[in-house]
Structures are given as C-alpha cells and as structure tokens.
Image 1 (cartoon, rainbow, N blue to C red):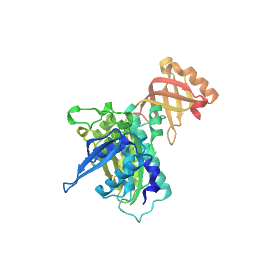
Image 2: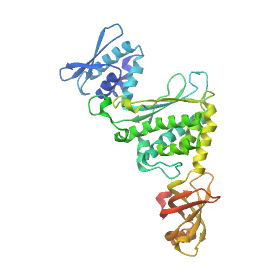
Image 3: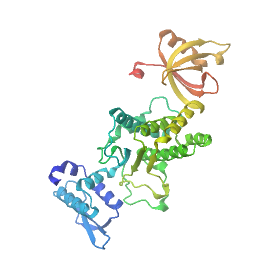
Image 4: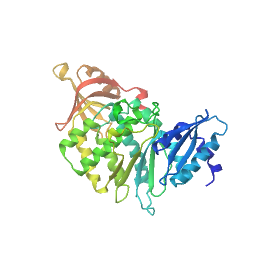
Length: 382
C-alpha cells in the first residue's frame, strides 16, 4: 500500500492525536525542532534510540511529509502495517467500543437480520448507559432525553475489521488539556469527566455487572444493580446481541481515547466475553426488573378507556391503554386534579402523557403520585 493513496487519512491526523498516541505507547518528548515541531523519542528492546518529529500545527508547509516520516518510523518500530498505525492515530480522539461476533472463525457468515440486531442493540446499550447517567430506573420506557439524543448523534460507526464480524462504535472524547498524563495522586473523579466519557465508562461497568449477575444470579444483587445504572433494557439488549454472535457468544472491548487517558485508580475493566449459555439468564434478569421492581417518576402514554369519578378528588381514577410497551397494557391511574383534562382527552380520542410512580404489587398495575399530565400535541406524535 503506497502512501499517495492515503492522503485522505493523513488529512484526518492532528498533532494532538499524534502526541497522545506516542505518549500512550511509551514515547517521551525529547525536545523541540524550532517552533514547527516537537521531538519524541523511545528506545527499543535492543537499547537503540528512535526519534520522530510531530508538527505543532497543521498549516506548516511540510506537514504531510513529516507525518509520512512519523508513520514510516512507527510502522517499522511496531512491526505493523502503515494503515493500521495511521488508523489508530486517527482514533486517538475516540473511545472505541468493539462488538465481535464469531471471533477467530473467518469462515462463518452472519445473516443480514442478525447483523441488524447487533447494530441496533449496540446502539441501545449505549443509549441506556447514557440514560442511566441522568436517572437510574429498572426499566426505561419514556422517550430519550435531549442530552442522550445529542450524545447518540455524535457516535460514529467505524470500518468493519478483519478476522471476524466486528462492529465498532466510536465516541468522540474531549482531550485532556492539562498537557500531562493523569497521576495516581491527582484523584480525579469519573463524575468530573465529560458526559461522553461518563457514558463509555458506565457502559463498561454495566457489562461487568451484567456478567457477574449472569455468572452468580442473586435477587439482592439484581436489585442493588439498579442504583449503579442497570436496567431491564440493558440486560435485554445484551442478550439479543449475545444470541446472534455464534456458539461461543460475544466478545466486547473498549479502547480508550489516548487524548484523554483513563486514570489507573478507576480500575475499569475493558474486555468482556459473554457466553451464549448466559442468554436466558440475562433475559430473566431483564424480565424481573420489568415486572417486580417499582418504577419511579416514569412517563407513560396512551388512551383513556375508563373514567371513575369516585367519592372525592383523591379517588378519581382512570384506566389508561398504555402504548409505550409491546404488547400494550392497561394501567390504573390515580389522577386526582387532572381528572377533567382526562375527560376531554377521552371525549376527543387523544393520547395523554402521565408521569408518576408505577406500582406492580397487584394484578392491575397502578400509577400513583402523579407529577404531570398533558394531552398530546402534534409535535409529540411526529
């Protein structure tokens, strides 16, 4: 592969990416080459010193030739193809999540429908990880928040990699502007990280949690996991992916953006194997969270099918045909002061949105502690 065919990739390489990649690989800054470049050096196993130049900005006249020399040196030093090295430098600004089906089996083929499942459910795991940063619920059924939707819009899908069927989701990460790798005595908190990094670290912690529960199912562990961001939705998405990834299950791994290194004290696991025999346990965990754990401050949407005025304001209830689940369900709602609006919605056949706490202790589910009620507008239905 000649360099002239890859100028499009070189155009994507930024100086900050190069510096972050080199520092992450053990290279150290050794000086400056005037104002145009910095010198980085590293000794190989034989003790020989290797040096490379990194431009300080992209508008220097020989930027591309300096980058080409950098890549040629790294190709020889790492004994890897030039395009692999260049691609990793481009990805220095991304947390890269890989979902690997049929690992090591290059003869296997993946039905198109199963490939769609992997793509769709991988995005779902990202979405529910992001939503759990904002609020912890055993089951998410309302629409995504604007912050989560904004996060998802930034995700990119990388090229399918060689060897197996590999889906890569790339999350752009803001660089660490301190100019240095984090040190153990800095004691940074994940809570202070950018939202994108909070999501990718939460994704890994949820995968660890799900794998632990699948290996040692326990009701108390399942309930406690909700406070750490676990949801029925996450269990179900992971089960769907694992089921279609071959007899050995699915391999998942996260590569952290080298422009913002992970702090060592966080002890975040980044590689996972979920065996296919764990699928039914994952599904049961999801079903349990859906049906047995109360849901607080949720929003449901549907049609008013029954009105019951009751003896006083507090006893006024409706039955709502909830269309946010599949299949739909009937929920009793203690509506109180919003009862007259429900009469209007019932008369006009309009969808209503209701917020409250869902109780599941009886055969008919009840929505109580109502905190919001509104009749759907046109924008809600688009």
